[in-house]
Amino acid sequence: MSSRKIIHIDADCFYAAIELRDDPRLQGRAVAVGGAVERRGVVATCNYEARTWGVHSAMPMARAVKLCPDLVIIQPRMDVYKAASKQIHHILHDYTDCIEPLSLDEAFLDVSDCEMCSGSATLIAKDIRSRVWQELRLVVSAGVAPNKFLAKIASDWRKPNGLFVITPDEVDDFVLALPVKKLHGVGKVTAGKLARMGIENCAQLREHSVVHLSKAFGSYGERLWSLARGIDERPVEPHSRRQSVSVERTFEHDLPDLAACYAQLPYLLAELEKRLGRLDQSYSPEKPFVKVKFHDFTQTTIEQAGAALDLDSYRLLISAAYLRGNKAVRLLGVGVRLQDQQQQNAIQLELFSQ
Ligand code: TTP
Ligand code: MG
Image (cartoon, rainbow, N blue to C red; front, top):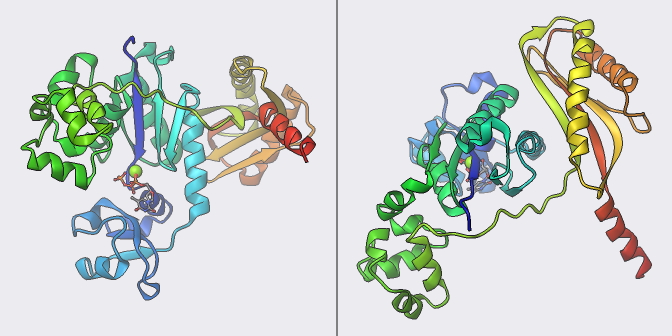
C-alpha cells in the first residue's frame, strides 16, 4: 500500500471554546459546560484554565466546583455547537470529501489525493487551522501522519493550539518510544495486562512475536503487533453525504458596501461552478444560498427555494443578506443546497415495499 496522508482534526475544549468566544466576559476565567450541581450534573467539558484545577470531562459538577470554587458553569447550547461543527465540516470539505467525522469536533481526512497547498498535508492542516480561526474564531489542533491511529495521537501531541506531523520516515522512532496505553484500542484492562507482562512501551511490545501476542490477547494480538510497528491500514470512511457545496472567502480588507460585495460575486460563482462540476451524478442542485459575515462577526444566511442558479439570483440574495446588517463585510459565501438522489431513491424503495 502506498503511503497515505491522513489528517486528524480535534477542536480544543470545543463546547467551552464556543462559550468563551460568544461571551468575552468569560476571558481568563475557569469555565465548565455541563449540568447544574443541583441536578447532579456532570462536566461535558471545560477550558484549559479549569483543567489546571483538575477539572475534566465526565466529572460530577459538584466535585468540579469543590476543586475550583470560582468555576463558571454554563448550560450546554447544543444547537450552537452543532452549527459550529457544521461550519468546520464545510471548511474541511474544501480540501477533500474523504472525511470521516468522529464526533462534533473531531474528524479524519484522507488528503492523499488533494492537490491544494502543493499536495502538502502539513500545509493543508495549517490552512485548515487558520481558516477555522479566521472564520469561526475557534482553535482546532491537528495531527498529520500516514495512518489514522498515528494522526489521532499526533493531534493530541501539541494540544492545545497544536500541529504535530509524523512523516513516514519518522514513524519508526515515534512508535518505539510510544507508551502502549496510547495505542488504538488499548484501554485500562489491556494496559494492565501488558504492564504485568513487563510491556510499557512499543519498543518492549515489539520483542513479542505475533504468535505470543495472539495467545495472550486473541484476535487483538495481531493488531497490537501491527500497531507497535506503526502499521494501521484502516481507511478513512466517509459516511456522511454532502448536503451542500459552497465557496467562502474571508477578505483581507473588509468590503465597505454592497457594490463591493457584488464585485466579488463573479469570482465566487466561478469557483462554485468548478466545485459543482466535481460532484458525481448522485447529487442534484436544489437551491442557492449565500452567507454574509460582517466585520463584527455577526453573520446571516439566506436561501431561496425555486430560484435559478445564476448571477441574478445570487445578487438578490446577497443584497437581502447585506441589508440585514448594512455594515462592512469580512466574509462572503455562495453555495448550493443539494438533493441527494441516493437518499431519495432509498426513501422511494422503502415506500414501495410497504
Ligand atoms: P473532546 O474533543 O474529547 O474534548 P474537548 O474538545 O472539550 O477538549 P480537547 O479536545 O481540547 O481535549 O470532546 C468534544 C466535545 O464533546 C466536548 O467539548 C464536549 C463533548 N463531550 C461531552 O459532552 N462529554 C465527554 O465526556 C467528553 C469527553 C466530551
Ligand atoms: Mg476536542
